[in-house]
Length: 180
Image 1 (cartoon, rainbow, N blue to C red):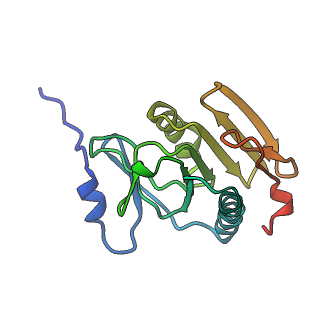
Image 2 (cartoon, rainbow, N blue to C red):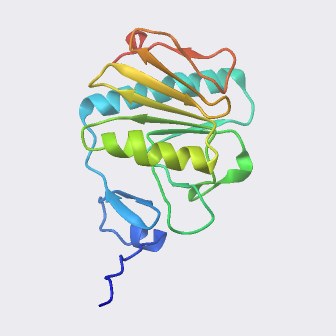
């Protein structure tokens, strides 16, 4: 008796989705994405604005992008993600399609439909792909979990804490001071 083989999808399958349908591809498996809530969008937008303002003032090669923004974590065509916010400091990783390789810093705003993906599947993929820092902003728990993969350190913060960005020496973000 032969076992059924699981179909592996590629980035071509992602690009062939009907207009308006969003999904991510991890190790050849498609994960469909529900539309984000209004609160999710406000948090994502405010974080993006704070990071963009900091990067514009600081100068340098880093760029911040907000979803939907394509990140191709590996050379093969079986992993494609759309982090809520991506900071890329190597301009050679960027082209018209998105980011080819690991961003330096990724922020995901957790929602009921993305919780398992953000805390488990993406955590592993981002770490193994070479992301330097990963934040999960969890509105349901009013908590921000920060993984600094370079120092192998994890820390949790409340929304009222000033959270230091590990890839920058002088950037802290306090969600309670943002318009969320």
